[in-house]
Structures are given as structure tokens and as C-alpha cells.
Length: 338
Image (cartoon, rainbow, N blue to C red; front, top):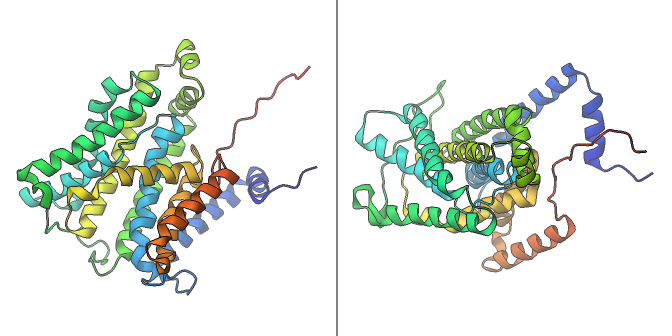
């Protein structure tokens, strides 16, 4: 009998654990995640910055965006190369509304998510009737259109962008300042936990089963009565909402945004997090996001060569684990084998 790997052993323990044990494990895992900013270790610190300075961006922000993109790419099997557009819409929504209205960050969050969801509908209705490379090209073009509109619209700052973006007001005595990334880490982590909770609940219900059917074979899913356009559109809407949420948090942290922050490179990086971690597995994409966000920081001592080394590392990893570090667990079909 083949030796079980660590994931199999944990899976066996999890399947046999009582509900109380699972609840205790979840609580301990969440508490450990919130306690990370208090760690101080030379292995964790990067050569030029402390771990706290990279906690918010790219580590936890990459993770939040990867969880959102995973709904589109991993759950539904739709190749989206323009995910950065939703991120930009959320960031600009917060910047514009905070400057021209009396709304604070917490009141703007629903608008940031709502506008990003609306953009998902506008993009999805015509684009999701296509498949494969054609759909990927349209999403790529959408991401560039949003960036170009931002560059050429002087009313929202043009190429110079927007500055003096206010941060969130204090919560339970915790102040959000540019000098302390920890409150933003806790804020983004909390948002990500709520997103994970929502996505997991959907995954075990009709939308999740529909997404899985579409990912495996869209023609068969449609033949079996699944409204493929409807559920693909829902994937775009949910992914867009998460992207808009992440954009608003990001803008409130850096206090100034420019169109050059929302390029295709960012979409490719988030997509790489999903692919490296394991498409369709939430915990896998989070692992991929953490690795892709932190390893480049750890390799800064290599200067410009770190990108080459990082690229080679990615090539090696994808050859060793083509389905990702933590690929989704396929459902077993139990039946008569005779």
C-alpha cells in the first residue's frame, strides 16, 4: 500500500473527527492567523523589511483576490485575464466617493462591491456566451479598457491618479494608519474569512454543483438542464464583488492610486496564485498566494536576478505538481464495479 502523504493523513483525521474537534481546530487556526503579526523571527523577516510590512500587501491581499478569482477560474473553469478590472473599480469607487461625498470607508464598501458586481454583469452577459481563448481575450480587453479609461479621464485624476484617500475610521480603538500595516492585515483577513465562508456554503449547494458541472463539461451540463449562462454569470458577479472589496481596502491603505497599479501583470500574478496553489481548492489558492507574495520579498538580496530565479522556481514547481500544490479533491463515485 502506498504511503499516505500529509494531506491524506489530515483528510483521514478530518473525516473521522467529531464536530466539536473540527470546531476547535477552526477556532485555533483563525486565532493563529490573527496572531501572525506578533511573530518576530529571522526566517520570517525579509532582508530589507520586517514581515509586518508585507503582511497586508501582497500576502493577505493576494490571498483575498485569489479566493475571488478562484470562483471564476477554479470553480467554474472560466479563464479570466481581466480580474484586475474589478480590483480597479473597487479602488476608484472608494477614492471618488470618499472625496465627493460624506461617506466613510465602511459606508462605501457596499458601493465598491456593487459597482464591481455591475461591471461583472456588463462584461458577463455578452462575453460568457463565448468559450475558451475567445472569452479569455475579451476579459483581457476588459481589464485594459478599464485602465485606459482611468488614464484618459481627467475627472478621476487621469494618469496621475487620485491622492489623499482617507482610511477607515477606528474600530474598537484600533487606528488605521499608513505606518502600521497590522490593522489592515486584520481587516483584510476578516473580509477573506467571510468570503471563504460564503464560497464554501455555495460550493455545497446548487450553485457549487452547477459550477463543477460547467467546469468538467459545459455541453453536458447544459444538456442535463444546467443554465450555464446563469451560473457563469453568478461566478463573475461573486468574483467581481470580492475584487471590488479588495480594491477598496487597498486604496484606503496606500492613500493614493494610479492607473499603472492596475495592469495585466497583476491579473497574471493572481491567476498564477490560483494555478500554483490548486484550482478549485480554496486552501490551495491561499497557499499559492502566500508563496507568490512572500518568496519575491525573500529573494530581494538577489536584486534583478530574483525575477529569473523566481520564474525558474515556478517552472520547476509546475512540472513537479502540474495540478497545483493542493489540488482539489475529486469526488469519488461509489457504485457497482461489476
